[in-house]
Length: 174
Image (cartoon, rainbow, N blue to C red; front, side):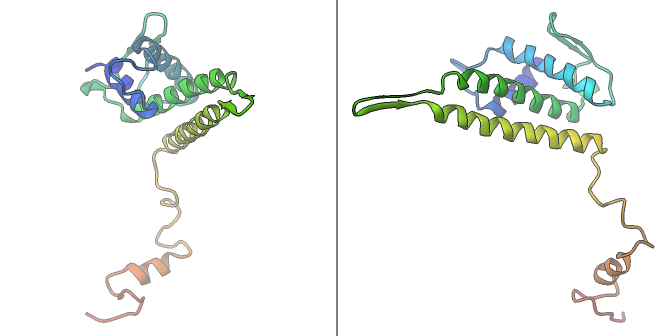
């Protein structure tokens, strides 16, 4: 499989654009947006792999989804950033259509459509920012590097989680 198929599928799932007969976004639009997102990510992050991005030629090399060059972190960042860009575009489009019309007893209110898209947009963009922060931090666990054998609090950890202590932190002999 190629990045066009795999990343497009991931993005469609994130956007809930899964209708095979009439998707909201064409494959060409999703793929071009993937490349725009790749260009933005490359300028933000020091990636482990160097990528060549050709937006007009719709190419990305090396393919991050190929087994020889599989880069799950880049695929995740790319999918989330692409979804964020597409939803941002939809928010801008729908905000112009956010109207409310009343004519006697009947009314039409389209303001809720844009507000729902804004919630989805903020959610996906915050997930992207979180994934970007995790990647930039080396995917480490927060606080893991802080506790060492001589750090304050390590005695408590040793007492409560060591082999010579029971679950209440009381010392017992073997």
